[in-house]
Amino acid sequence: MNRWQAQSALIEAAVRQPVAALRVLTGGCIGEVYRVDLRDGSTLVAKIDSSQSARLDIEGYMLRYLAEHSRLPVPAVRHSSAALLLMDFLPGSSLLTDAAQAHAADLLADLHGVRGAAFGLERDTLIGGLPQPNPPTASWLDFFRDHRLGYMAKEAARAGELPGAFLPRLERFGERLDRWLTEPEYPALIHGDMWTTNILAQNGRITGFLDPAVYYAHPEIELAFSTLFNTFDAAFFRRYQEHRPLAPGFFEERRDIYNLYPLLVHVRLFGGGYVSSVDQILRRFGF
Image (cartoon, rainbow, N blue to C red; front, side, top):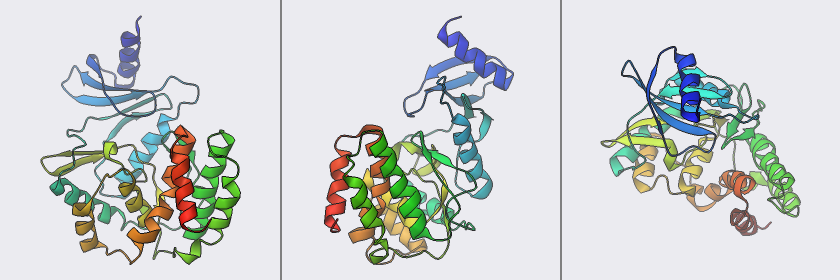
């Protein structure tokens, strides 16, 4: 049995019907991704991870959580296990026109209206394949300091990607976050990994959000992340602020502070130039 036959057999065992065609898709940083055409005419997306550390069941959990707790469009999960995730195929591309960005703003403003009892989540999740701890926490500043900045910095240093000298700098910065950040009105549900390839659009409308890293947070961390790699621009923020106006200082200060977390994720994953980006932000704020 060759690799294609083996992958088809794995999928057929999960859906209990024959695979008519299997095609490789781009995107995704975990395992292999395929478009699956079934004999009955339906189309799925399959993620397959044959590694010993496979955790695709967590991605399945996060997609189902969004489907059950929000109106955010996400692919329906048809099968979820550590090694295999099967989802409905959604049409569209990552080309986000101004109209699509405005629609994304409507959808995310609605998502950010979903309230939680605490910051974090009922279980730990993943971001970019990395563990993301979500212990329920009453204070957003405590959660962001300890379970986002502190945790990911230590993981990056442990992996040899972040120089150890950064840890005390980040610790001192974390102790003074209240100079720039405030507690939000409530813990809001966020997608958690808001960059372009995780969004599909067609004819000026969003067709789906992919690859979440969900938890309850301050919505500003989601909005900041969306600017880090130019996912959204003015068309998005104009519409979003019609629903949820941003307090002064977001673009000037808080955006950079919140982007320390995705930057540390990228340091852990890739090292290199992302270290200098972390350094620049810390220096900007006096650390």
